Length: 183
Image (tube, rainbow, N blue to C red):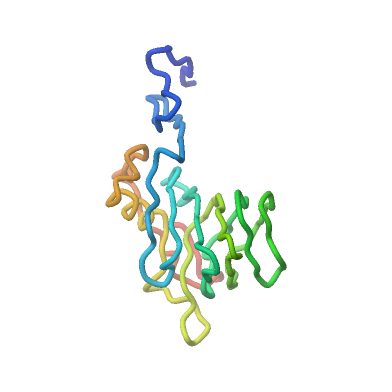
């Protein structure tokens, strides 16, 4: 059992994002810069809150600019999302601030941000990627926790997240649902 008693001297300040020696992390999202996503997801910015390397999970705040379309994309794993601000529309209906979403893996859909944009906190399992012209997942341009970590690190926005451990193995997740296995 870890001792989670933190001395007053070790506490995070009111505006500080900090990882503690016992593995706990306190993230102040306002202290992190927005990191743009290039390529097929251009127009979406994110703040990487945490990565659980051994489970291939990343936790992010995503910001879609007003009217921006999250083009048809494929979920390699499940996703949980909580809409913090704004709204968006997709095939399941209009999604407004305060809404919670659960999306299964092996799912393709598209979302369009409302006139004020939208900000969503998401817990992503495995990865997400665009859909090619053939309607199948475009595995070459998909991204996962390592991709998101590297983007955030390049932007100076991942200092609170430890790098992947030496034992980390990138998932062979660019598959179809019936071919998926953890490495």
